[in-house]
Amino acid sequence: MPYTEATLQLLTTDGTLVENDRVAPYRPLVDALTDQQLQDFYREMVVTRRFDIEAGNLQRQGQLALWIPSLGQEAAQVGSAFATRSQDTIFPSYREHSIARIRGIDPIHIIELLRGVTNGGWNPNDSKFRLYTLVLGTQTLHAAGYAMGIAFDGKTGTGNLDTDEATIVYFGDGSSSEGDVNEAMVFAQSYQSPLVFFLQNNQYAISVPVERQSRSPLYKRGEGFGIESHQIDGNDVLISYAVTRASLDEARAGKGPRWIEAQTYRLGAHTTSDDPTKYRQASEEEYWKQRDPISRYELFLRAKGASESFFAEVKAEGEDLAADIRARTVTLTAPPVETIFNHVYTDEHPLMAAQHQWLKDYDASFGGAS
View 1 (cartoon, rainbow, N blue to C red):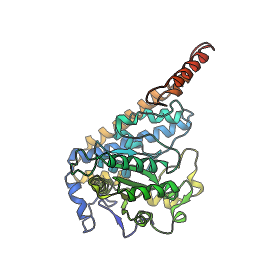
View 2: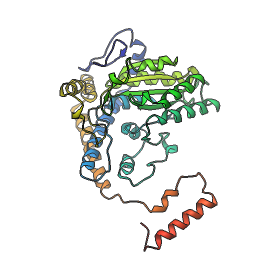
View 3: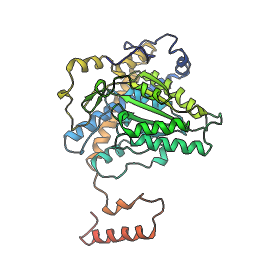
View 4: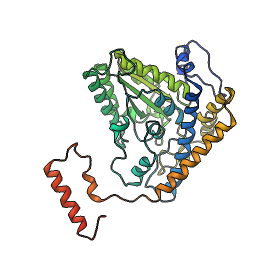
């Protein structure tokens, strides 16, 4: 199974905190978390999973063209997202639904994207959460360039954690074999840019198992470029938070890029166009269900004295969100066709304005806006 001697873990599958020298440097980061913050980790994992399930149901009922589930990967995402600071910029792939929520993105905007009624989904400048990308690995190049830019602008390395910026980019095990990812590592390391590469190793590049993709653990790919790299238990929200927090703060301090491989598992399909029963064994799925990130963390919170009313409240919040998303999804309609010109340029130039008006008039000639 994928865990190795290098895998860092703070929380066992039975919800017990790990005590050893390898994770000791990260314990102060976790010990500093308040009960409210610890409960927020759980809340986001549970509520996002309920949203995720509802979105999958909506796709099966013909309301979405496609859905990309993140089931099973909640701890890797939630822990690392809470580790960012407000000034940090996040570059997602296409599966980071919980991170979007944490950054203030209304989940209906993700639905709009996969229903095909928007060309983007949200303004990334408002949240410092960039747009989803379906092209594997390209976001790592975008993140590398952005991180170089903030370093050139003097927005990092001053020693002020409240203002120094860092960047984090998310991608998967399959993407790690793409040339773009390797090129991004070249630039990030060469320029010592403040970038954290966060690899969610969910064990499959669609149907190709990770052991067929690489003969060595994927965190070693970062080491091959001279980047300080860690392998963590991606189903442990506490180690995800702590290692990412430390890595981001090292990057923003001017110590160069960092690489994190989070060992997790995609409990669902790659997308709703996929049937994982064709290439996965039931015994493998059962192994990972026993390591479910939410179940493990619930045991931890119960041992700390979290009340039944808290768990009931979180469950109700998830149900409320699911109902709200369903109600809003079925009323979504396609926007006017001329909106394709929106956001192409910061300021619309005369030629673009003329084309915009022509298309608007042409569409109106058929009896109204489409």
